[in-house]
Every structure is written in C-alpha cells, then in structure tokens.
Length: 100
Image (cartoon, rainbow, N blue to C red; front, side):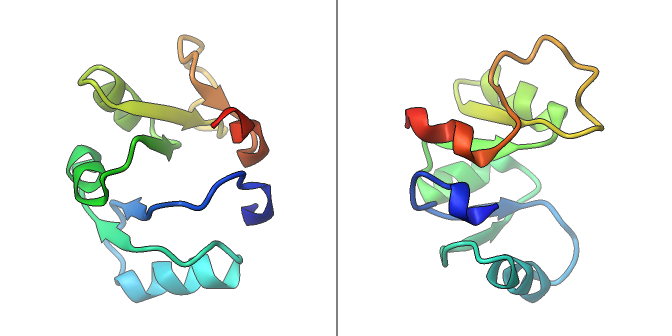
C-alpha cells in the first residue's frame, strides 16, 4: 500500500495495454503519490526516461532482464513468482524499502 512507501516515486512504468487513464485512475484511487506514468514494454527504456535508479516489479522476466543488464530491479513477491527462489532482491511489502 502507498502509505508504506518510504520515498516519493519518480514515476511509474507499465507494460499494460489498457488505456493509461485507467492506470492513472487506479493509482489515484489507491492513494499512490502523483508521478509521471510511462507506458513501455521495455522497462529499461522506461527507467531511462524517468532517470530511475531502481524499479520494483513482480515479473521475473523483467527482474532478470534488468539485473542482467546493469539496472537495479527488486522483485515484488507475488504468487506467480514465488517459485523462483534465486531472486535475492525480493520484497513482500513496500515497507521493506526503508533501506533506501
């Protein structure tokens, strides 16, 4: 939940194919801080546009791609990625990001 964020996001990156307005509305309704939204299938491209240092994502493919290419990605633990035990940079809650 957004109240667990120990920092202000520089932006959000989505690969969703739904209209951006829907994602923006969801972020607003859920109480996430206002920040730019980038639609990008390539999350590296999105990170570069936002000049983001870290991405939090629940996709093991995005996690591996970014970390194998010099970017920092933290895997947000979800049922569909729990079977991948090799992911050391993994969180269960946004409150675990207090190290930043």
